[in-house]
Image (cartoon, rainbow, N blue to C red):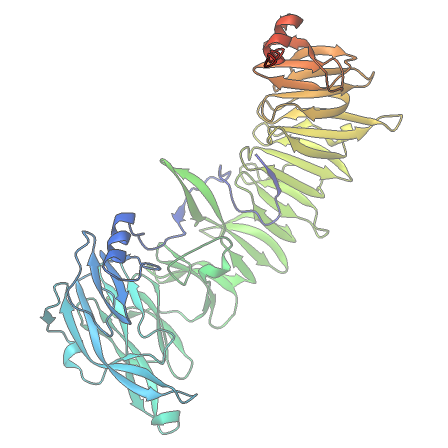
Length: 528
């Protein structure tokens, strides 16, 4: 239950807005079970950085590769070059062509004469196999890109378009084949990149771009400038490049350079491209038995005329445009004024929760309904659920720190004499369980604490604030052993436990306590 600043936090759940639309993020390839990894090693293949694609592992040995299926069966053929296995259980190979790179070193520049094989290693007749001009190019960032979709998958292929103005006398063009080896897009584009499923961003040599549904061969009637990338969203790991959800993308208009949300399936802007900035936000949420990282798709932070607000998926304003910055902590939206001071905004009531902005708002990751607020050097504790202060900043506590393994907050201020005046706030019980004392000592990490009172006496309390050992001027330090709470009779080497109590508060006989905790050692008999 550690407190963190709310600044730059997107990490918790309990949404406050009415819509509840989201997608799972942090998607990665299927991990390999340990027993299969061991089989990979036992057969002399490299075991790091491998994962399943369409039910098959790419396994490598001595610069050659082959496949292993989910049952551990290995294709008995090594290839100098091959692609991933496609969804149609077909893979492609090519004959390497070697050239000299810029530093005079030989390297494979391309793979020509593309051929297709099934998962058994048997030749398969395909359209790409009958096309002699296309190849896989190692001059690209990767020799080929493999894009997964709902109904099929795609591989990029390349072609040399004669062009005397280019180095080498040709211009490298890119196209697509599907998992069955059929040519989906002729290789005539400068680049072909998947947005989501069957939607691709195509760029031509003149710098123009278009979005096409390559399954239907339909070009969308929109000019797109830039599409938001997943690496621009905090805390996200994604296989895909572009942020997309329900066939929608966050993008700028080609003519305006302003941001909006474009619905590719319905071929229209669901949020018009009129905003200076538009950001999605993400959090963690319990879904079934697992905690999942999700990206909300029904509410967006947007900036207009230099001010931040929020709109829903229909472009209806849900937070007014009046803030210098916005965040979300899983329980409330955090809004900032021009001075960087913070408040919480409740969409349900369309109001700011506090009558003024605070210097800092901290939250508890195990109890996101609680927050510690700091204003003009004073600390308060706020309960989101009941929308009320449990400890009001007007009480004058200046600092706090978490104790007893973050079960409690120790609040501190000065009294009229300038001496420490402390209180202990229980996070679990959401109340102050002790107050008006000088010092606090953690006697047990999660069960007990020792209090030093204003009059110089000491007592021991439990985590409900119940007094176990009453206040007294005890001569030694406190202890907790073998289920017994006690004070020693001195600080010397021969100190003995006295003032002994059970955790229930029942007093224990001193002699019995000492016998339990400090039994006398039996004297050794001298040898004759």
